[in-house]
Length: 46
Image 1 (cartoon, rainbow, N blue to C red):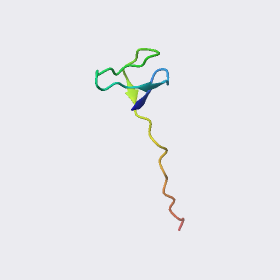
Image 2 (tube, helix red, strand yellow):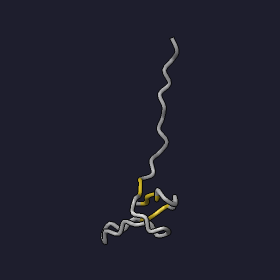
Image 3 (cartoon, one colour):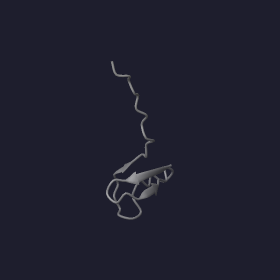
Image 4 (cartoon, rainbow, N blue to C red):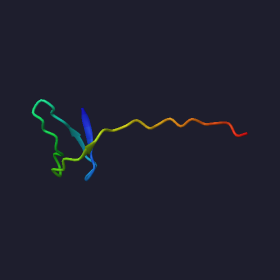
């Protein structure tokens, strides 16, 4: 599974078997999951 580094914005593949959760470019350990764009509900105006 890939994550995004919060510091440099690089896409990081995480190795969960070895518990290696770290950015390969900057060494940061704070990563976030990429999320799909949220669909906004449009409510008709009254």
